[in-house]
Length: 481
Image 1 (cartoon, rainbow, N blue to C red):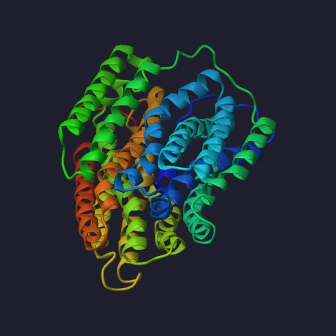
Image 2 (image 1 turned 30 degrees about the vertical axis):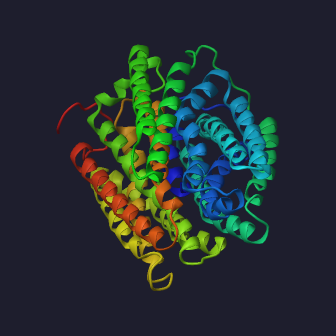
């Protein structure tokens, strides 16, 4: 997944914090700590996409294995993101941040030394668990350490650095892959993790809230199990070009686990990991579906485009990383203006038009791998997708915070961030067939995936137009306006 898109999606986690800001002696160093910690997740998420061809050749991994290199990270991150934030509220955000960063460093060592695909997937899974610990708590620390305009500036700096990490990460990763090997991309995490831990222990104040309700472990485990079963079945089915008895059974089990998750969450009420009361708001339902579909379309392409450029067009890893550069740069340069525009005219129009522009970019992506150079094939597609995402990501943050009442803004923004990762998770699972293809078949499968991505983005735009309110005023709407 792409860092700039997710920084805007995640920034609501910090802006939604209603806590009274703590008295912080070194706010600049606290901000630096959160930036270093978050950069681990952002850089790793974007760099690995560029390394998939090299990993596949080194570990003899097919399309299903390469899908799991991405999804072994996204699955625990998606399923445990909310519980990671709740654990920080209960046991201390600094403690969870330090533990998350330390676990991420250990997991990175496991990935870099992995002798087989199984070991790499284990390391990637640990990275996902640790990212679910450090991401929400790094943002919560910002929310609790700054007030009003200072909080907005701090989150803006955090988002800008995240965008820069998303732009630079694939370039550095591609260079490391070309010159040293894919294992080097995981060693880069170690100095960042060390610096983040030292700064956190020195400058981030201790905190704990023992009066908070207990963690929703049943909900977290059911969500993780359900997503895992569905992801495995979709990955296996895409490779086999269809469901069989085993994959169909696992898919049914996954759906059953998610149904049980909804039942448990309904019983828990407001103490649930995902309070179902949020979905009383028609706008929030629309925003959740839009996020799932739009980030699904984006996530699938971000995995497939570098792979196709390397395998079909002969790009080096650093060239493939540079090919995606217009995406983070465009989003970083225009998201603030789009946020202001959405505040002035309401989020409905940008959230409807942005996905349609992304859909056009997906169709342009069908030319990637064909005749022509980068400027006539890849660049137009990436630029158009970037413009569409820039139109949507900042208004999405504003709309999520406005779609529910004040007491639910924290969990609503966290859920939206988790749903964004889930969209990429599902898209990567379905993309397994493309990652398994070679030669002419690879381009055929990639073009089919681009069409699916385009249709998915169009559906996101239609949902936004039908369900999202024109006004950005906070509400709990239950019907048409």
